[in-house]
Length: 216
Figure 1 (tube, helix red, strand yellow):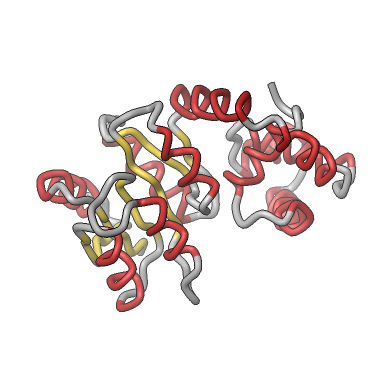
Figure 2: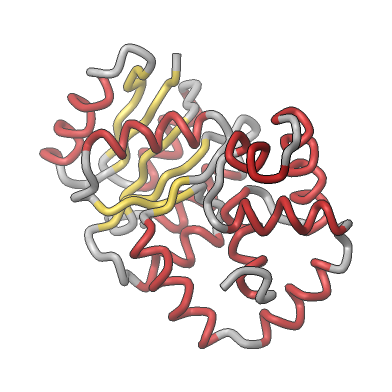
C-alpha cells in the first residue's frame, strides 16, 4: 500500500485528488494539508510514501516544503504540482529534491502512474513542461556546465550509459532492456551514480546530466 499526502491550498483540488488516489486499490490518502507548514506536520506525524505538493501555497510554499520534507528522518518522495508549465519555481522545486512534477490538468491515469513510479524509486516529469523549464534555466546557468562535467568524470563508461538513459526518463526496466542488463544491475548502477554525483534522486541526476551535455 502506498501512503500518500496531498498538500494544496485549494480545497477542491485536494478533494479531487483524494477521490482519484483513493480510487486506486494500492494507494491510500493518509494525510492532507492546506499549506507547507501543515505538510511538514502531517509528514512528521504519519508515514508518508509520496507527497503531492502544490508549488504555490500560503505560510510555506511548495519549494520550501519540499526541502523540509526531504530532510525528514523518513522522507517521503515528492511530486510537485503546478498550474503553469513555465512556472519559475518548478526548477527550484526539482533542485530542492522533488522526484518530479506534474501539471494539475494532467490526465488522471498519468497522475496515478506517477504516484506508482515515484513510490517505486523512479521519476515522473511532465514531458513538454520539463523540456522547456530545463532549457530555460540551463541557458541562464552556464556555470553549472563546468561543475556537471567534472562530476561526470567520476562515473565509469557503463554508468554514463545508464545515466544517459535515466536522463531521458527511462525506468529501470527500460534501461535494462536498452542496455541488455538485469534490472537488479541497473538499480545497483543507479545507486552508485547518485552517490558519485552527490545528488539525492533521479531527477537531480537527470538535470546534472543535461547540464553536462550528456543528453540533448
